[in-house]
Image (cartoon, rainbow, N blue to C red; front, side, top):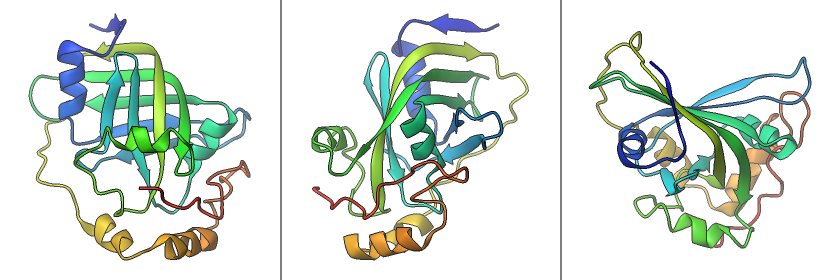
Length: 195
């Protein structure tokens, strides 16, 4: 039923690029640390960079657990499920890193997301994931669900923020600069936008 893959290409690449939602899972090294699982959406915010590297845009939110865990240990799993069409689940286990707005690589990376206006949604970082293990499984128990459209609430909320307003928003949130477990999260003050 399950199969390991050496690279993200062909049918596998088409499948993950077609999904309107995927999930990220990370955890700190500490045995009693908080495991984090997050849904990610917004059409155009995910990109396959090469056969073993993917990236997604990290937008403003009320915490920065993924960033904190990646800064501590780099471990991450991404998962896509087929909610329509033939059943399938794909997981990419790998090492990730947040590329912040002041990183010299940021400008090149943002070019992989041509359908996204980076001035909206409070873009904080680009998460780059290098695949170590790629596997698909049957997904027979995943239910059918229909996708209607992306919500526009997040973009509407954060489009009205300039860098100063975005930084002020992050400074007020308890789990942005530090994770739930006290790990370093998003660097504050927020690096200025270069896009």
